[in-house]
Image (cartoon, rainbow, N blue to C red):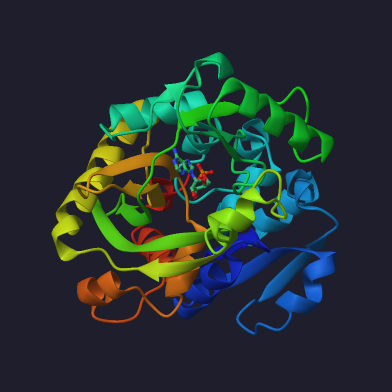
Length: 343
Ligand code: AMP
């Protein structure tokens, strides 16, 4: 039988619980400083202890994972702590499509894929001199919103960038990405594409709570203007909460998921296999503008560890995203098609 392995962070608990519930062996690559935390959970069969996650590139850890017939589940921590080259060099089979993770990390490739999928996006702003409206300035990769800032002019941009450099949050040579600010209701649409069943499933929606931009809304404008609030509010993700879309928006959500899967199949074979998320805002006309995608499980699915509402409708039992991944691996293993769900 095959085993499921992941890094100890992000959504490791639901991934391994889901695998355990499907009868698969579970392995956690765990930083020594978090050993005590993860030992609390009895569904984790084996811990491989490391000083830092980059050790998973070492041949001995890869050999251990392979001797367990492990499939590695990629998540945000893998992407934020490792380069695309490093991820692509991992010898353990990775669930989904390891090649598409590069498209998630690289802003230019990311935009290209979203454009191919026909998703409406905020306008990119080529240089700081072109800032003539509210923009959001982002870092490359899955930075979790830390170091992002809003600016409304070149001067504003320069001041905030310099302040973040002074605070050591971004580096002076860092390539920043500027995009029009899209206002509306935040919605992170979570999907799963099954390459075995050739079907897109809508799993659910979440919202992210980001500090300290969110806390700002609780401070009256007068107090904000009098100072006493942080110089450059950040978008550091603290947690997630569920959001239920109006049912009339569901059809549009499915169609975005399907277009994304079709575009990914063409752009980066074998395509968008497994979990993914399209992230954006609904505006006043309920039109969706997406500013991001994640080409793997998102931490926002942690809110549905007991099962998502839409999966209860589809499967008639509580299924988390972690469990859905394990179901696909098990089905693939039993039909001798593991190659179809891993790269
Ligand atoms: P990202 O890393 O692109 O997911 O962005 C982190 C956070 O920044 C998001 O969760 C949003 O709150 C915010 N954000 C990103 N892009 C935009 C945008 N174009 N307009 C408004 N908010 C955005």
